[in-house]
Image 1 (cartoon, helix red, strand yellow):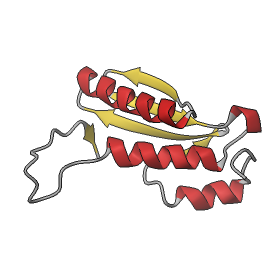
Image 2 (cartoon, helix red, strand yellow; image 1 turned 90 degrees about the vertical axis):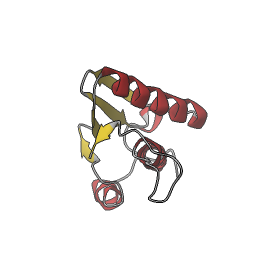
Image 3 (cartoon, one colour; image 1 turned 135 degrees about the vertical axis):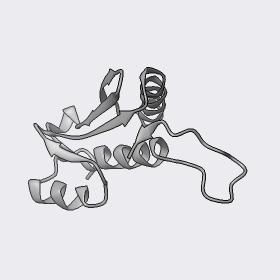
Length: 112
């Protein structure tokens, strides 16, 4: 159930599919190292769009070289499947780059 807090074992298992994410202090968290203030703002705005569209909102800390994302479900008092769904969407969009052979050249915003 999406609004039921997951056990520690379930959180650990689901984190295996989210590179760079960890669980701490009752949230799942990811720090994106960016290439500067403009990149931090672009990353934060992309995350904001995803969270608003999903109606499930992250806590963000936006600084010059990084964006820290924290997700939990307040109504469930912990981490739920909603948090993992939003995290996967964030990860897919924030880390996206054009593939080889693409007509798009890309602009690397985060350091991986």
